Image 1 (cartoon, rainbow, N blue to C red):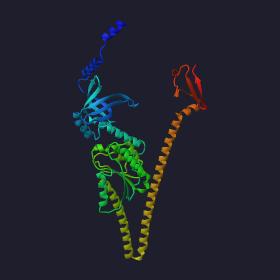
Image 2: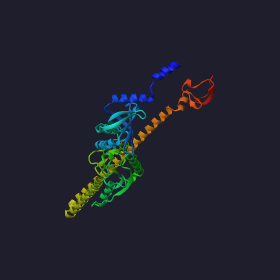
Image 3: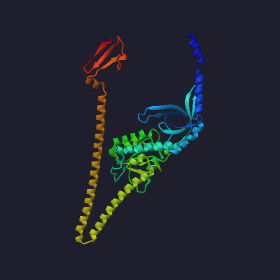
Image 4: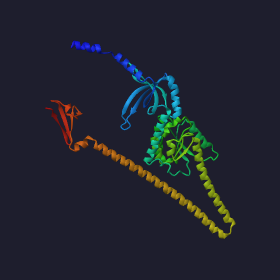
Length: 418
């Protein structure tokens, strides 16, 4: 035994010698940077300007993690890499993004394996984001809701406005000033539902504002989602599936004016009406009332003309004039009646669709829960046996003398293992 031990000891190496050999092997194998594809699962910036990440790779079918490692972007590189990526992609460098990066592979005897990120290819992430955006649009179309809000009848007099915006945003101030200072002096009733309009909290905050509006929906004609201009990265929340889902199915027409000048967001695509800026949203509402006013003035003008003709023409034309006026008014009443009937039908259809959808979801969930419950198994002749309160799934879990308890559908009993 002593000789064997000494022989093994003589042929062994220390842990540091092993890590040195691993380090040398990695340096030889990865002597130049390597381009890799990965997803950012964690990202942390420290006060010194360095960025520390955890990169992962997931299985496309099961979503299970296939690989995971640490990565670092030193401050000198990060100061250039971060603005380059965000300017090119319009996205903040954050967790959840798929990236293509050039890394040097490093191994330390104490800290283990790590990757030092030297460069990034923003075109790869742009492709990933475009694919994700297309996927959201297709999902909305498959769900049959992409155009629901666009199909709502826009009111002729949109004067009662529910506004979702930041209370301190310049865009909101511009919107209110445009309504107040317009030379037409139309009366608008506005109610602000304050929300965060950029960043990770924006999506949930805007959805919460929509829910508050829904609780008093009869007080409003339309909903406006507005914010002033900003960097493209600030508008990422408006490409959210959940936000699009809520907006598309909202029972009031939504006007989107989120301050972009070039790109069209998914919110713009599902909203009833999309304009470029908050000021443009105010101008659109004013133009709607101007059109309605012009229609009324035209009607008044026609009536005045008829009255004038009634006075100036002979008595034989009086009956014809009265008939024309009655026909005009009757047509107007019939038209408005048809509009109201269509709105009523659409609303009833939307309510019925939502009720059926939610009822089906609840039924499926109830059946799924019942099929996987212990009570279900017991009712069908199965029993459950426990040892010290824990369910037994294998005979290897018990030994002689163990006290076990068996549960059946109509009661339970104890046993001792012999």
